Image 1 (cartoon, rainbow, N blue to C red):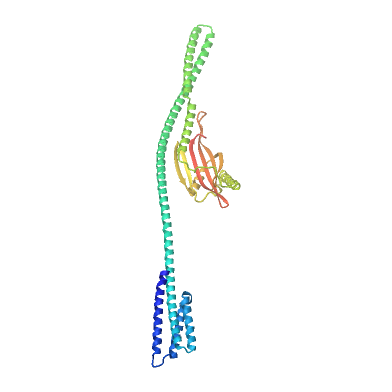
Image 2: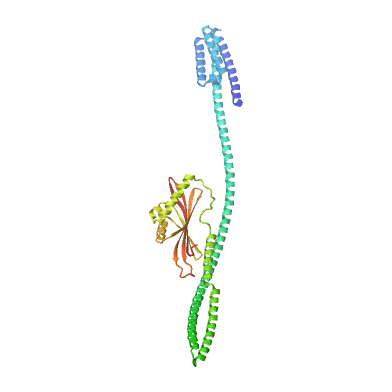
Length: 442
């Protein structure tokens, strides 16, 4: 600001000196004209005063009264003094004072313009500085955002590497599961073959045992006849005794064979081994199903639901289950979200087949399942996060047991439903089906 003010002051001083010198020269010239020393024409003074008034008005227009107050007051003061000198017939003083007022007014005008220019320039400088400061702040913000973005990118790369490793681990586990599945399938096939062989040997042993029993019964009848003949008198007694001894020997031999066959049948343990096979098959099925990746998220046992919400959710689940038991599929289906996707898992001979079914396929599947009579084995209910979960196990007979040594086979259907509150209603947003085909009723 000082730099802009210093130049106008030097200029004003020079202008004032020039005006004073000019005024003195005019006064001397007028004084030396044609013998009229000390006399000045009134029109000249009037013109000078008018010029001073015009200069003061111009200075006032540019706000010299506030921007150059000292010089402006000097101009107005000299103008009043010039008018007073004119009234007192002091032409030379009036002319000098009018010129001085004009000079001061023009000086104030110039000073006000310079100050205004300097103010505008300073305002622009301040504005530029403010803009520069804003740009510096924006640059600092961008640098901070860039650093954060770089950090997030590094974290994302780290997470990507972890996810890639998890994918590789899951692929490896999947390969191992496939190998395990093939191994289980081969073991089941071998066990089935062994059971078939055992059943064939058992049936053959049972036939042989029945035949031996018939032979022994016939021998016993012959012994009874021989004993009667022994009791009779006559020549047939000795022959009858000999035949009876021979028959007893035969029956002892047959008894030994019969006992041996029974021992062999007992050693084979057809029923026990068959039951053990069924148990191993069920265990293999469970182990294979447990080895697959989970279908539902991990459960924490924590919930944000109130007691009233839990009660309402359990009541909705009870109505959903009752609609199924009453074969009212329309009411049963009304409890599902429109966008639900059901995870369906079918386990047959230790082989698992997974699929996802939408709402339309769910309705079709439920209608097919409702064509059979399902027995409700048990139902468990729990609460997780914002959901009420119900796990329902049902079974139906597929192959009855042929005899007391055989085992009946069933289809086991486990339904796990997740229900949450939507407005004032409760809807099922996730369901998992596990269907075990041709297994003992576990």
